[in-house]
Length: 70
Image 1 (cartoon, helix red, strand yellow):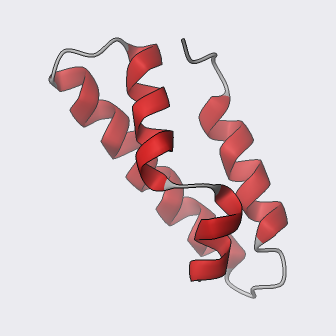
Image 2 (image 1 turned 180 degrees about the horizontal axis):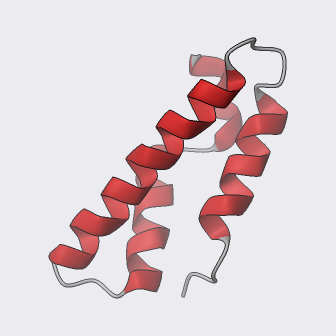
């Protein structure tokens, strides 16, 4: 069961992992949008909010991996 604030914690970790990038604010905002859209889609499929957050984060990949991608 996902706890409230998991997306915020993920975004904080991403910000830390990608701090060397000049456009970090744009990257974090884009990732947040993608995660929230993923949660919304999962809820529309019938998942609970908690399960939807867990699924969205799992599908997105770890913050360090995403940071390395950018």
